Length: 403
Image (cartoon, rainbow, N blue to C red; front, side):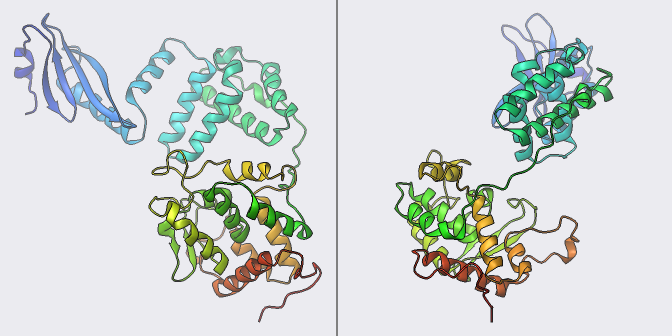
């Protein structure tokens, strides 16, 4: 039963605090000394928490209900109202250190649905690892350009030049947010200049090295899921993320097609991958091991909920002795190079690599485009890999004609 003014005024507690519920988690906690506190019980990220919302009569029933609705709105956006209240208090108290302002910036970006959950985690991790330990505790007005430069120089020295660029952009965004909130009037990152990062191709081997790579994976001492993952990466040349999050429900063995939903794809568009006979055999061989889990390449630690570790495939290549020679992303370069040299239509190759123009009109996008041609191409590629014992390698300058 909902509360009313009469019930609230007459509410009493004798020996211990007593709750008077208003519904939806909102209640009035009445103490033996006569004090009456508004509380809201809620759950977020699987945890039960309680939010204090003031004292009656300073906060009346209508105001308490309004505060409850505001808290519910934050929870619906994945924001903890208790943490939000704490951050607001720190802001009011003048605690404008870089980390606290970064939290407010992150929360606003999440609330405005500018970021996916995966992107949010990546952004926050880069700041936690590379920025907060150095000046996260400092008042944002006291952080200078030379101080930021020293931190970025550490990344440059270890060769993380692409990460340096992202960290600088994210720091700049935090300063711009602080400026918009009237917390500072300066963005010191604008004064920083670093040499332009020239992107290097991911390490990848040449056509002539393919037999060695195939034999290395085949005979390597690897976990079944990791070995199968490397083989599927080589046979389908999909991105590591797409392979890791492959689900059994996405695999159609009857048609030999792997349907990757937009939520997994980098371009956020559905994608179809034709599976060669060899790829189908590998997946069927893995079914007895992970077929009862959600993910094809399930984690060894928590197979019921998670796919294998994001570094599992690259670490396996390193363990096999391919460091500085090959990466899982390099499989894409290798396949593209060889198939182009063999005379396949560039449009079919680009489609298979899911290299779609970001400006393509959604209504005209066709995930099954060139499917018949791509099925032939993927079987050709798998057969070529099968013959990677040096006996039947097609010369690199030979042009393959597709009938």
